[in-house]
Image 1 (cartoon, rainbow, N blue to C red):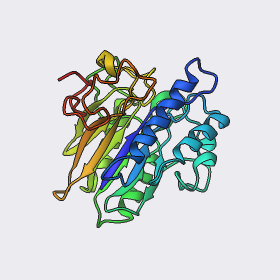
Image 2 (cartoon, rainbow, N blue to C red; image 1 turned 90 degrees about the vertical axis):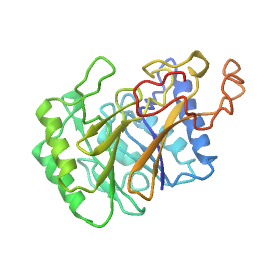
Image 3 (cartoon, rainbow, N blue to C red; image 1 turned 45 degrees about the vertical axis):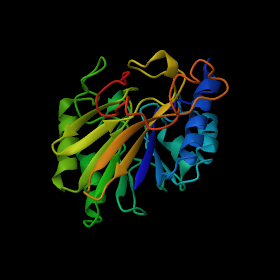
Image 4 (cartoon, helix red, strand yellow; image 1 turned 60 degrees about the vertical axis):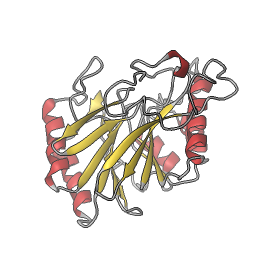
Length: 283
């Protein structure tokens, strides 16, 4: 099974770089569509739009509908739950009623569970006892398959960037960690939010953060020749029951003259950019 993950697209029609943000997502979806072997599914780990605006969701949804494989989305701190649900339910967010956007996808060898970590009072994540109850209910609905959980906020201490804790309290993050560990079936956790590639662990569970799809907002060190090239993650589930994560650089286009020729076989998986060792650095 291959999962393509994008995150933090921050679509905003009034932003000075509005077309660049939308173009980054369009190019990323086109690249995913061209994968061989193909991805099985795309997950978007939140901050789909920047201001919770319905017109921005409509633009994001139109781009994501171009995908040739199923798409599922999680809510980020910049998202508006109800506007997101209206734009993406049921095809990419199978939640019929207002409220938390937690759900499970049962169509693959690995169950996908979206966890809503949005706090109404902070850009950091929240995970209350009620959140824990809902996640346990989703985890216990099927005890036969491994699980991949996707959410916006990384539930581990982030050792790169200015803020190591991305939840409102250390207690909230610890509660989420305990809930993820309790069933023993969570194979991996996929996140966004910090706009850079990094990774961590929750006990025996691998946790990975994909970089910001919007190249103008991406953080961390990138060689100059890929400043304008989106990067996303491919998560491959193997027969041993674990995920291997790779960073994929979206191919340069005719508008990326400085980048063309600077990357061998632009668009392939590049071993020079490991996804699980912090910022992307030249090899």
